Image (cartoon, rainbow, N blue to C red):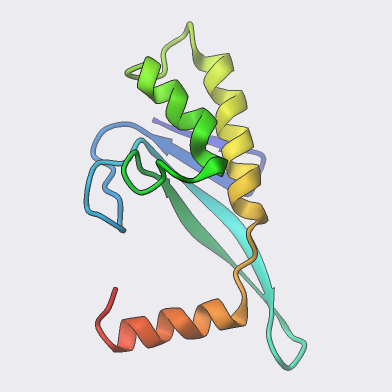
Length: 117
């Protein structure tokens, strides 16, 4: 199941999602826009995908409400769609607020080149 929130955020819900951090099952993913200002002052725009993983995000306060929802409800159904939509919106807003900086990019490149990803 996929849903769009506005033109920029795409949420995917359903089986078959795998967390890239631990390779375990993920509840959902969201493709969100991000921007970063490079050292030369130029703005770089792109998208990043965030995953909601019951293992990796268990101590993440930004994911607490949505993880609590999935602890009680096995899946989203017509009776819980409004409640889950509000929690997904909150999780996406909180998760997208975390800025991805040039230093983060440099660290990701270093880890990738060192085969640490």
